[in-house]
Length: 298
Image (cartoon, rainbow, N blue to C red; front, side, top):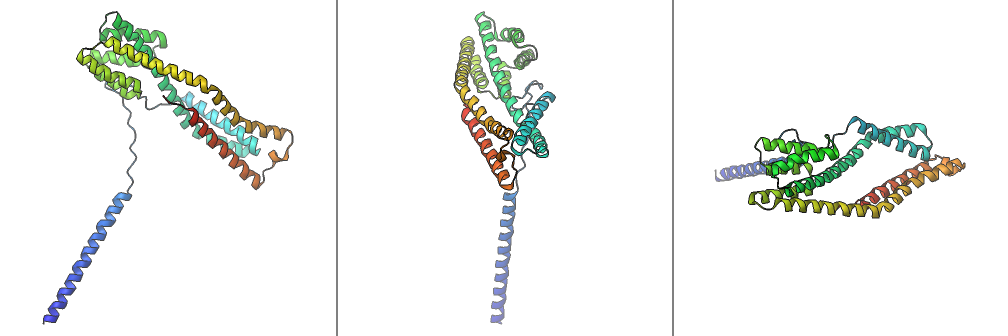
């Protein structure tokens, strides 16, 4: 009887051990599944500000004319390059269609960067208008109201800075603090100069500091940045032109060889096609690296 009881205990222990192992394995597999599950990409939600009608400068919405320009540029560039290298109309048209579809993404980034540069220049002129108003002894509300007419006369009614100042004045009429309105504009603008001005303005306005000096200092800082960027642009203008010329030269050389009846440019054997594709990839990579070297940020 004692042997039978001992055997039963041993079998129960083995069963319990197996159950524990199975439970551990199930837990481990569940953990692995949770880790392997990819988190869904969070879509960026546009910020329309406290008034609900503000513009989010993190995003650029392309117009029909922007799409048209991007499609024409992408299609034309690919058509010329592929015709010059491969002398195949079908391949050139197919490549042009592909590049026309891809070009709007790059053109959108270019337009977004240009939009931010224009907004910063407009904000600099706004600081100059506020400085003159504070010098005349006006308060903050009157200074921003006068800035609307100043910005409208310089940039027109459709300018971004005009709409932003109008929203600030509307918010002040609705008893919203000027600090909250400026911080809201700074968050939507994604410009460091606007954010630093909003933070300093918030502290100084609550403590009763000299707002005229703050606005004047901000204007001078932005002016210095713009002047430095202009100096850098003039210094690297020659390098940009050289880079663009170097990227166009292969196409010109191939067209000249084809015009002189050279067999190297006209042949489309397997080896020549592979060499042409590799060369085009090298030139494309060189252009990307060159643009990154030239793109100097302050």
